[in-house]
Length: 152
Figure 1 (cartoon, rainbow, N blue to C red):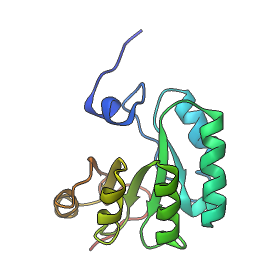
Figure 2 (figure 1 turned 90 degrees about the vertical axis):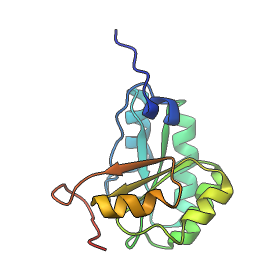
Figure 3 (figure 1 turned 135 degrees about the vertical axis):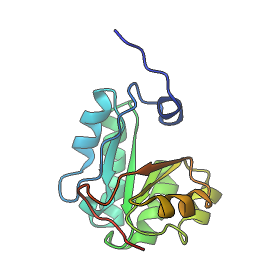
């Protein structure tokens, strides 16, 4: 059996340096827990939860279902009640992944709360901008991939 030790596994506490992407409509706590149980980093997609109350419930269910590594994706621009969703993540002390647009407004809140934070960008210039805000990691996905991207 191969043991993985990378910056990603060290940062996120997962067995393998594999991160589940956010999946609007399907990225619920069940999928995040299953991915986590398999050794990768699972993702609850906050847009799938739809409300802060449901997100809190989903976070707690995921926490009960797995001892593995997982977090919450906040897709900027489409996540309903974004700031309230972030407040839930802060209250529940979960790793946050932001994506789709500039995280400028959320960055100070995430950093002040001391959460682990990953930002997903589609272009190098966006990744460089996000890096200046201090995330723990940047994912560069490219404009040709699936999902929501920002040309800004």
